[in-house]
View 1 (tube, rainbow, N blue to C red):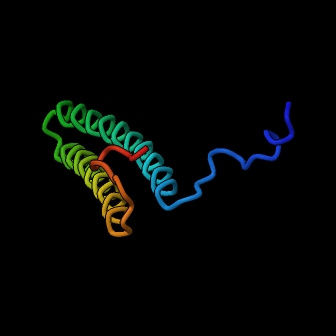
View 2: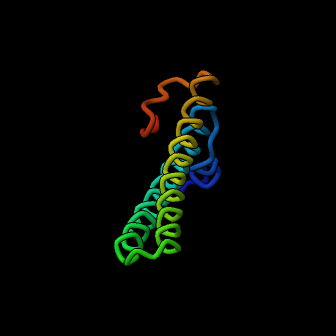
Length: 104
């Protein structure tokens, strides 16, 4: 193996603002996907609670609270993803892409 290969800079280290944006964007995509899965599970749990209440006001209140928190989680995840996009656009990162895609 040539020594120049061993002396090369490590790969995966962001060297430009565009590279840093791509890393942050990819991380936010993973975070967004994780939060969306949790939100869907919470929403389904709230729906099951709501349909199995048998008229109990306390259980209805709990089911509405779970559904509200699930929807709030979706809103926070979308706003966080939008914030990453807005900051990238503000910093002048070229080829920012769409709201849910990262530039290469």
